[in-house]
View 1 (cartoon, rainbow, N blue to C red):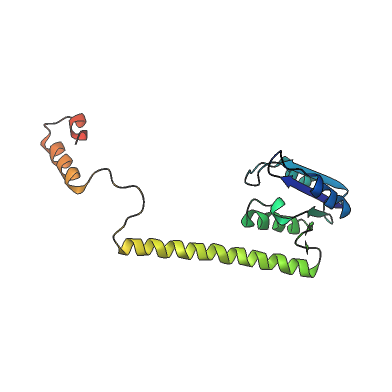
View 2: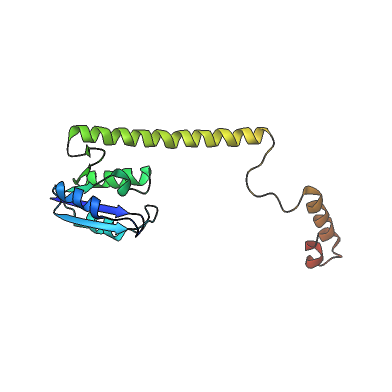
Amino acid sequence: MKIGYARVSTADQHLRMQEDALKSAGCEEIYSDVISGVKSQRPGLEKALNYAREGDTIVVWKLDRLGRSIQHLIQTITSLIEKKIAFKSLQENIDTSTSGGKLIFHIFSALAEFERDLIQERTQAGLKAARVRGKMGGRPPLLDTRQINRMIEMYDEQKNTVAEICKI
């Protein structure tokens, strides 16, 4: 069975075009959301995923209708594949029920992993370069060494209250 999922970001947009394309593709059930892609709660998608069974195909009009990000998209499709549910995107012509579609999906997955690794490498290199220049990450210290030493002296003298020491 083909199960369609359609999503638009705002109420001003219309689902009709996506729903028509999904019906033309043979979808017997169509679920939809009118919600931003960055929102984690999408009841229509949840219903579609829960309705799908082994051997079914989840169909979307376009890849960006399914996932909030490349990472989310890959996680969702991987989850479908593990449940032996195929995925099809009409605009990108990706169909994981075919060997070519699986290949394209795995290439996307590899590219996303490569992108994550590059970001991590650049971040680490940037932090290392900043440390070499004497920059420290995080929030600046509230007290300098002179202030800390003075507070220790005041405490050791036992002539000041904690409140007085804290005013430094």
